[in-house]
Image 1 (cartoon, helix red, strand yellow):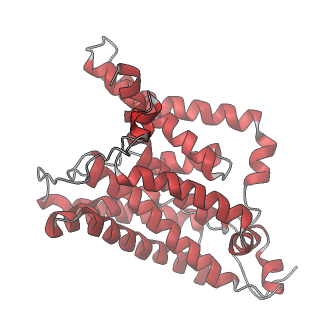
Image 2: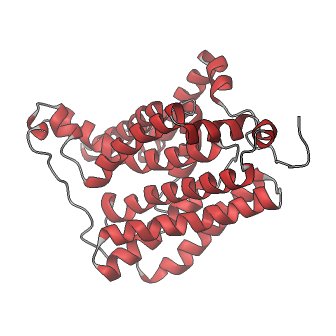
Length: 309
């Protein structure tokens, strides 16, 4: 595999945890709930997925455990924001602090422990395609699952009745309630499931990407995922492009470190985040109207059933 293919393949792997987190947040925000607790959810997913994989010897059970833990954290956020009508920004920040602190406390006895994790699986015939095969079809199963999830979510949100109901609740919950849709139930469902998908992204960090547990190992990827939702204008396909862009920048800075460049380490470590934020600003300026069109109209606004338009 040549240098370019190696960097592109690494970009896909590096961008995959952000992609899962972004897709989960898109699902949650599309229903009108803002969740800023992604960093904490990813860390709890990373910890729980690692521990269950280690004890069971099966990484798939670890991913299932991470999804369940993420759903439970999403349920906490849903209860605070939907049932109690709490401030969604404050609740999300509290969830981040809770997940960060709890994962650090519970994971202190697992430092230095490694697991086998998931290995790459080359898809026959497709993996033999020059460059593309090496980059896209010589990955692990969770990467392939992310490809499917992007397509399924795009189809679901744009071409199915449940997806239309989801968007209706996110855009105008009072009108959706007047039409007989169970607004609260729909909000709960996608807030919980979205958080579960976010946690899978965290588990990818510990089970596949690193194959070990480390405190605060997500390194701000939860916050990058929040930014990626805006970058993608709430579109799953554009979310994949944004996640791989970040992954490519991160893979490039790791490559530069390996070559012994004279650029200070702090600048190299900050480079993926700085460039991602720069691209986000440019996209926001150039596509302001598109972003407004993609954002759910009721995002972050509490729903009171007795108030109807």
